[in-house]
Amino acid sequence: MKKEILINPIAPKAIGPYSSTLKANGFIFVAGQLPVDPTTDELIEGDLGAQTKMSLENLKTVIEPYGIDLNDVVKITIFLKDMNNFT
Image (cartoon, rainbow, N blue to C red; front, side, top):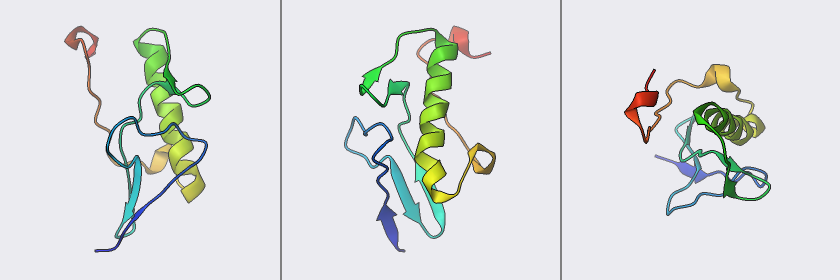
């Protein structure tokens, strides 16, 4: 299997030992899109809605250079700190 790490210079940097974007067998896998402001590399302040919006904007920024938009996303996994926010 051929894999390629993709680097988008305007997307937030990975904050751990992982690649945020990887291409393998014609698929693009994205990981770790947190509510980080890409201009400061800091987590944003705000409620769950603001954090969700920032995370999705970061995902959009990561995938757009590859001709993909949010309509092409097949699966998203979300981790919640407080299960009261589940709904």
